[in-house]
Image 1 (cartoon, helix red, strand yellow):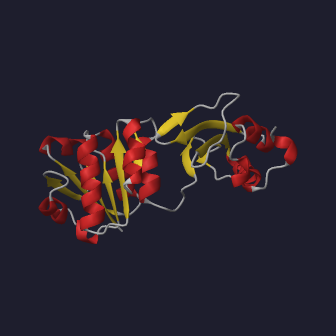
Image 2: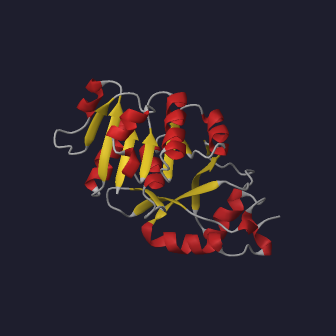
Length: 223
């Protein structure tokens, strides 16, 4: 599996290292050759200096055989242009762009480009979109006992209060992603279609929480 990353800042280098550690082939593009100093000395991937949406630069990075492309440079417009070139000109299936302005994220998503707003979990969210397996778990504490996980829910919960969902599953919702923004649920927040629910829980409880979330809502859960 070959993955091309545009941008070798903190997020880009973190993604590159994680992908290489998992056995993937990686290429990193950046306009500034000094940016590659963020990569560890033993990095074996391809390093290409140039503009990430230039066809020749992308070709040098192996875009024609790439399974995925991540645009994580410092510019929203550059990220979206590069992502569209990767998808529309080279047919890369899995493409994601980092967006600094969350208000733009929903606009770009309607163009068919999955986006990740700049939040604390940027690198983890990017990896989850680039590598489909193990998509549920976003983060674990050093002991592995506590997990931050994205949990799917039944359509029955749409229009109901998030606190009712928490009560039914005996779980704590850490935040909800809605149109590129992260929302910490208050007592009156209602679950909307398209919301992505993130739960913080112990590893041993995640399976049961997922089961309750996916089950049909009981009549007494919401009013």
